[in-house]
Amino acid sequence: MNSNDIRFIKSINDNKSTKIIIFPSIYKTKTKNRILLILFCFILFLSGCSQAEEDLEEYSGVISNDQALGYEYTVTKEEHIFTWKIRYKGNITTIEENINNKKVLEDYRMAVIDGHLILGKLIISLSYFLIVSIITLILFKKSRKNLHAISPIIIILACIALFISFESSIELNRELKEIKHYYLTLTS
Image (cartoon, rainbow, N blue to C red; front, side):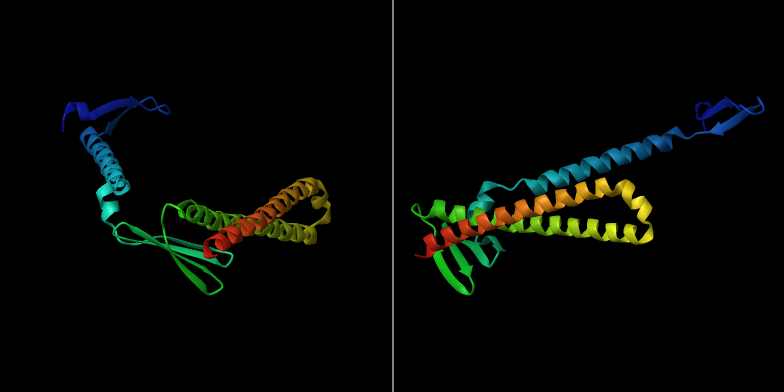
């Protein structure tokens, strides 16, 4: 142990000198290890995110699939040919992607994905409204006097939840019509 590893400080309570032993080499090693661990994780993250284009070109198999509101699609690739299987209520249609139908297929895919997301948003907003309602009932049963003080906040939270739910249901209806339009365009 070096003389640099021992430092003297004065105690505030009794004005006596106290020896505190510090091992800076251990602290430096821990800091270096942490930095190396962070760099290693960062390198692993970057290597996982970067995929070469030649890997994508040679890939064969299912590329994408999703479903929402009874409509479903699966995109598979074999060599350089994309095959789409679109489904609705058990009716399966297989379509080979070409220049003429590529835009409609992509629009159908995006509409199904958007429908799935909007349905999730609707479920979350209705759950939020349900939670606010249950908390209000619990507070109402415990003490009615305290409920009057926070009732404006509860009303605002409930109105926000209902507004988001109403907006999501309108969006979901519009998205369902859009999905149906693309499905009928592709299957006719």
